[in-house]
Length: 567
Image (tube, rainbow, N blue to C red; front, side, top):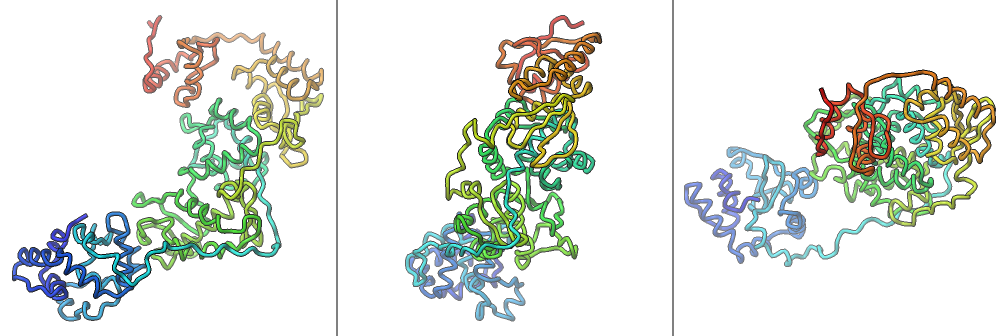
């Protein structure tokens, strides 16, 4: 930050004279001499104390706020809201209007005393670095001893109409999504899915297949590491995906909620339906800031009761309006009203932009994540047990025991090869089931999910290294050994038929010094895409046309490669 002499050196002689008159200093005629003379007086501790004593309590309070900021500086828009504007004037207007005699704001009064200055092309306001320590901030009639307190807790409202209780269907739909990504090529399109892919998945999702909801699922899968990108195709990462899929539902919900808290990939601002956000590349927002503000203020809502969304938003507006814009900049973001197409610039549009983001977070992603119940079209909300745990006012719901009635329901298989899995079925088992079956019908909380074992689905699984014997063993385990004989015989017949088909292809073999290292390679999306079937604990098949690409990927991951037998 600039010191006083550097600051004054940027002023013209007329402005230096205005400041000097208020400090009772006579200046020489040169700018250089004026800067030296004025700096010497202003940096005298007794003279600085005398000027401080002439300030009003409000002016001292404003200056105290600025002095309490890091580096004695603050974004200009933020300071303007606290202290008012400083009218920009050239020399002629300064001489003619004499604004220092009747300042329009506390900021203007401080500016013409030389106590504050603008830097960074008017981007921020600061107190010169060597002047700041001389100001006797302890001598003030303005009560600055107590930190600002947040408002009283929000009042609990009566039971509302039109309650929409949150659920945990995001867990089920993410399981379905991961299975789809395993069996098919699902490309990432603008951090979500294409309309065609979205429509194809819609019958198999419990929740609404909205662009924002899919974007949330995609973001969580990638940020949590349970999925990765292979040539812009979304694919599950085996070890990490299994860890999440095999966990009890409460643990899965917690992982999603905490993943959302820390996700920068999912950006609520771009999904608010009343806004049109332009990605110009000249500005960006940090989505974590809005979530942090929400979670912080949710500590003041009734933990078990209903509360007003408008009241919570208004509290944040009054106490922490810059939660999303630490620099206080309300001018440079390119955001339009979706209905009028007009730009929403300036603090006067706070409710239309910043307030709308808060409302969206509360009533959309937090509802999808099972954290908030909503009612009266989103006008009132209530924290769920998961929501209370996320904001730190209660413990996380415990994981149910393995034999709980609503956890681990077995898969059923009929003689036609139709398999049924309920929402309470272990998610990893349902994911595995989808690997060698085709989805049929839709999904409901009563009927659950339906899959059909077909020759095509079994052949697909076999190409992924899943043998018919493994399928039979899996079905016996997850059904409690209640697999119809006809299904077992059919699987064996298909396997036998497949065994009669000979395939001759040229392959390379990648050998690793340890099984652990090979396991690690399968967890790296950029390497895994080139790996074929495992050939024991420390070897894997590689297609001849992918050898060079694999070598490059291995070397990019700091693994030395020796090629033997090459022509």
